[in-house]
Image (cartoon, rainbow, N blue to C red; front, side, top):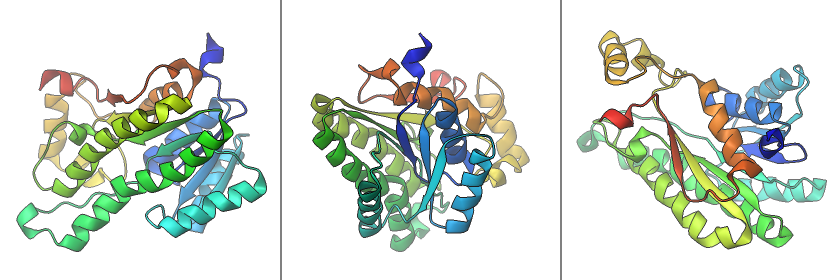
Length: 255
């Protein structure tokens, strides 16, 4: 049974993985046997994250590039081609948040959120899927959605649009790539204790609302997303496609 979840011999690219949820997912996949490629926009933070993983005896390397830049993504995959590195698993985790009412939101800020949270998943996955199809060995795409893939909240309109788009992009990937033995699925985290959510955690009213509205009565941790990520990256999910798994403590179940 454990062989179903064994990622030995697989290479996983995790975007936005120098810290937070991305780092936890990279570490989790590495613990399951994968070689992980840590990604971020800054070489120093990427290298630091790689050192944290390799110091634990895990197989990790880094590649700093902007996932919203199509040429940069193309060049990264071309580099891996030259090195003989085959990316078998892609976790599209890179994301940002920007809170402002829609009537006050500048188009440039809207576009920045959409590009980072949605368009990057398309750009990166397109490069990976082309190679997966050519190799004929299949592959795994894991997109990171959100509770806002299902429901909206005030002041995060661009983020909500992007994460709703992730849900449907995942289905589109499944529709086109399933016949090539590529499984494209998504994870929808609930309210997770991350640096990005720090202002919310430190807001007593919001913190109390999260705990009172969730059956688990607490925030989640990045490590609690690892199980779903390993499942969706492994042979255990070979007939799971186009789905989004919400890891939210039961929050959506009681809405």
